[in-house]
Length: 113
Image (tube, rainbow, N blue to C red; front, side):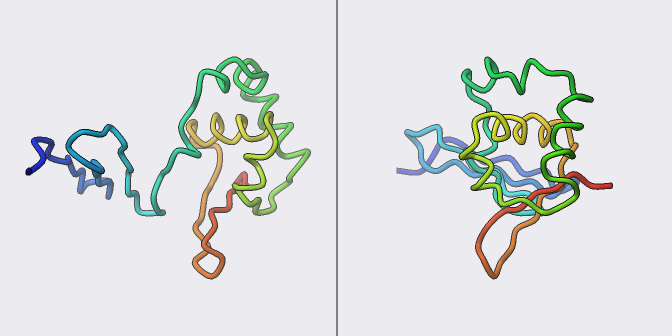
């Protein structure tokens, strides 16, 4: 049965939305830097966390104090409740740069200078 959902594309910024099936609501977004997955989605627990109740300036200072300008493995960030939520918040605000390492099949991020 064909899907009644037509995935929109936004060629001006390189985004393509893909629905995984007619009866599901799982959606992935393919961006120029790779696929944005559930690791980037914000949960209600994230919204209640200290990372979402801290000022952006303080959050950036905490990030720089802990990681500096080094590339950080996103999977390792997700093991830390505070910095996992901080990653989601800072990334959503454009404060972090992400890159996909093809040789390791992993996303890394950093605070650009």
